[in-house]
Image 1 (cartoon, rainbow, N blue to C red):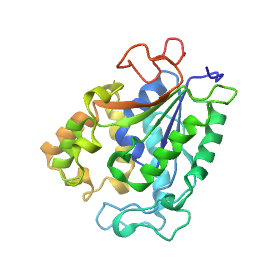
Image 2 (image 1 turned 60 degrees about the vertical axis):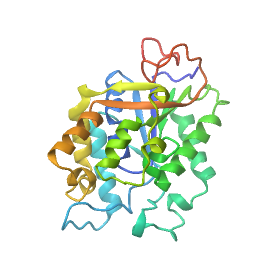
Image 3 (image 1 turned 90 degrees about the horizontal axis):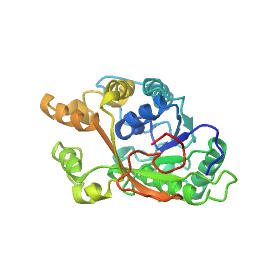
Image 4 (image 1 turned 180 degrees about the vertical axis):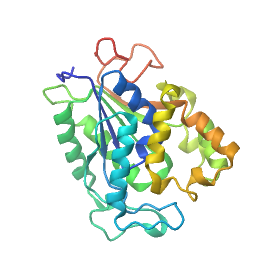
Length: 277
């Protein structure tokens, strides 16, 4: 059992806005329960695509850092911790020749940074990307690997290390809906989505819908007219928001404590923090 005086959740993602889509409501939920919520972001999204027609930004990384800080305020969590890698980009924006781009970084380097952060904040719970990185983004895959490795290599810490590792998980029905809406027709919902039996935790986050909307809106460069959400019809957007703002799901990536019932009631269920699930 960790010696941390305060229950702590460490969320580890690759880019500003990753946190808002998949776990924003859950982060607010636990922050309001008195949990310390630490968000580690690997990059500042320097190679992202600006989705607002006509917008020009001199330093996209600096802009997206500020967007993430505003999103954290909206989610009622503390400011983010940056791992200081560069966004690898996608498609024509891919930064093959940037040695600091996350795709070009030795995964052990990222793991080492995360090990140090875990030792510092002593989380009972870690949340990160699923093994497919949501939709296969190389930076998501790199962070999945590094966070998973750091969970497994920190059990020897005096605190006992984090007790539970969770992956964000999308039910295959939701993955099919996203595919139909044109996010990426090549994403097979039966590969990138998971069966209901794989869902260890499903959080009801409807009470935090306004926080999540505000966090998404904070990422203004990414939520413009040419973004996925911006291109949706009103009906499509309503259907997406119903799922995204109401439920957030997770699978288990690792545990150091017994699982006495399944599915679990929450991310802290069974990790030894009295009165908190």
